[in-house]
Length: 477
Image (cartoon, rainbow, N blue to C red; front, side, top):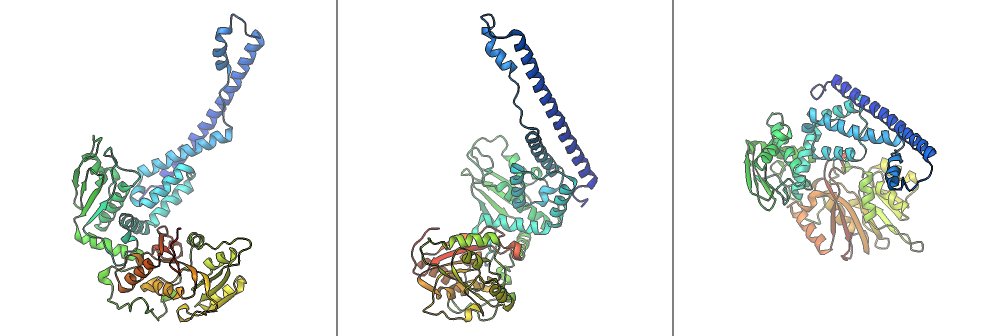
C-alpha cells in the first residue's frame, strides 16, 4: 500500500482532522457563551432603562438589532455540519496528494463526488486505509471498467463489445460549452483521462496527473478563450481537434495500443473481438442451439434489475381483476418469479437445474415448477400465459432462441419482458439481424439497464430490457 500513501501519513492527516473538529467544538462553546453574554447584557440594560422615551425612540431599531442574540443551531447540528464540511475537504486533499485519481475511473470519481456532496465517509484511519487498499487491490478491474464504460458512453455499440471494436477515431459530442469551456454535463474531460490512462498503462508508463496530461494540454491551448473556437492538440498517443460546435474528434496514433485496448474490452465483457471469434453458422432466427449453455448460462437476476423488469411487466391488477398467469423460463433462484407472485400473479416456473427447481418448489409460492430445458417444452394451446418474464442465457445468442420460443407461450394479447445481452441490438449476425427485424414489426421497445448491472453475480456483460406484446400493439414504457 505504500505505493499510494504511507500509513503514518494517513494517521497524521486524521489527527489533524480530529484536532480541527475539537476546535470547532470549542468554537461552538465560545459562540454559545457569547450568545448568553449578549442576552445578559441586553437584559441588564432593559432593567436599567425601562421603556423607550422620546429621547431614545430614534435608536430603538438599532438597539433591537444590537441586543438580539445570534441564533445558533444545536450543538449536534453544528458539529454534524462541521464534520461533513471538514471530511469533504480532507477527502479532496487526500485525492490531491495521492495517486487516487490515476487509479479511479470516471465511475469511481462520480461515485465519490456524490458521496462528498451528500454524506462524505467519516475520515478515520481505518476508513481512509480501507478506501486506499480497496482501490489499490481493485485497480485492474477498475482500469478495465473505466476503459469499457468510457467507450460505451461514446458509442452504444461498445456496450457489449460483441462484434464491434474501436476504430481509428471517436467523436466526443458537446465536449465544450458555448463559452469554449469543458462541458461538465457531458463529463468528457474525465472520459479523455480514462482513455489516456488506458493507453499509457498498456504502454508500461505511469499516467500523469490531470493537469499534466492530454486534458492539461488542451486547457493550456485554450486558456483565455471565452467563446467557441477551433483548436488542435497532439501528443504521442492522440490527436484531438475541437470544433466550434463544441464537439471534439480524437484520433488514436498507436495501432498496437489500440489492438490491446480492444483485447482488454473483450476480457472485461467476456466477448472476444471479432478476429478471435470462430466463424459460425448461426442457423437463422428459428434454429435454436440445442446444446445446453456452459454452466447452464446461470447468472441470477440482481435485485435492482429484477425490480426494473417487474415494473415494466405491468403485473399489478385491480382488486376485482382476475390474476395474471405468468411464466418464468430458466427461473434459477426465482428472483423474477417471486416478485410476480408477490404482485398477485399465478406463476409457473421452468428450471433445468434440479437442485434449483427443488428450491423453487419448496417456497410454496408457485403453481407449478417444471424441471426441464425450456427450449424442449411445447406450449399448451389451452393454457397460454398473460406474461412471460425472463432472464435467459446470453452466450452465443441463446437469449434470442429463448425469447423466440417464449413468444409461443403467450396469449394473443400477452406481454413478454426479457433481459437480454446488449449485443442483441448491434450484432451483424444473421440471427440478430432477423430478430431485430421481427421485433420492429412487433413494435418492441428496448431500454438499457445500467452498466455493470450483472457484475455482482459474475459477469460484466451489459444488458437491455426488451418489452413486446404478442399482438404487436404499440405501447409506452
